[in-house]
Image (cartoon, rainbow, N blue to C red):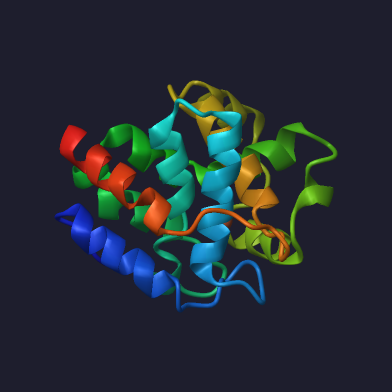
Length: 179
Ligand SMILES: [Fe+2]
């Protein structure tokens, strides 16, 4: 894995993801999945640039993790914490616990997950206990984590047409300057 020290390095990594097949949406490139996720969050949260960029890069560590992707959320958060700040990092880190939270609290949610997301759920810890649900809801950004997760699960549409990576580059650099 890697810790990014400037946003140019991060953008270069995203360009590599534009040539990498997605591990969670077969037939997709990693970056297509991220771009769709970011576009969904831009539509639902037009003023929250941190959430949009977190959606774009939430799976940036997929190439670094192993089968079941148990650590990619933590590795992705660690890679950008110093660069984009604690909130973006915690939103990235939260997208796996948010899946476990949604499966545990919404009976219809499991049906929305892709086959791959269901397969990785066990490797990522399965359903949350009652105590873990309380702990999840005690985190400051838990609602945004859930919003990112719902966009994540919706970002697997082979026919979606969304803005490309160039659309996001200035925003990534701006967030890097702010943090
Ligand atoms: Fe994802």
